Length: 300
Image (cartoon, rainbow, N blue to C red; front, side, top):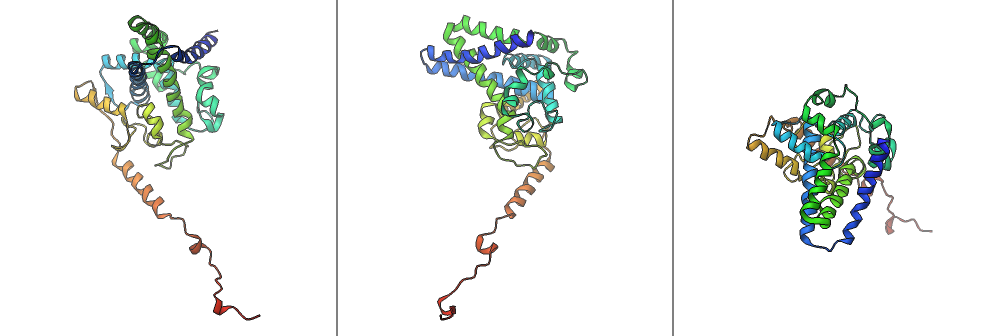
């Protein structure tokens, strides 16, 4: 019954994004969409992903609750459920047991199906490290149990502050775009993009998904070294979540930020040099051609 309700609510919110066509366009509403999309995206990536799933840094308790609340407002279930399944994704990446691998279960299931209507993923086991370590924290357990409160409170605030246009552009549309930006990491980033590291899975770096998922699109980097607080390993790889973590560290709200080890950068350089040296030979080098010059041709 609960699963059916979640299914109906999810698709109702997805469909509600079409209401943007019933609202007069304004650039201020686009700014509202961006604020709602990207702020909640940072809540997901900073708290759910890099903190709960990977322990990439330590965080002040109040800051942890704030970002976990913001992430839960994305309507992608609770922090323990989300982070617990992500741990399982890395444990079985692109193999049987991965909750959302397009190689194992197809694109639709990897993108949405596993999230909505597969009973195997309704719960995360008590031995999962995320559940084991954080289910005893009262405010995090409360968020996971009452995961509907943050999105409902956001939707209500948008309506009270700006009426129907704010509800549509500040909740309905960005909730839809953020859902697919997040789910695209499971699908797009295992199908399309570049592979800096030769990992055992099909993870790939993709700058488009990195933009909409605030740095998560550097997925091949992340699969090579999961513990790092940054997914964009180089300055030119846009990673807004990393910038926020660094800002928090500057004011004492975060500490013990896990760096990318030097050996990982050396490995990346070694792979780059190896690929550069593997220049495909030209057809002239590869296949000797029997060229018949006019003076070599025997008379008939």
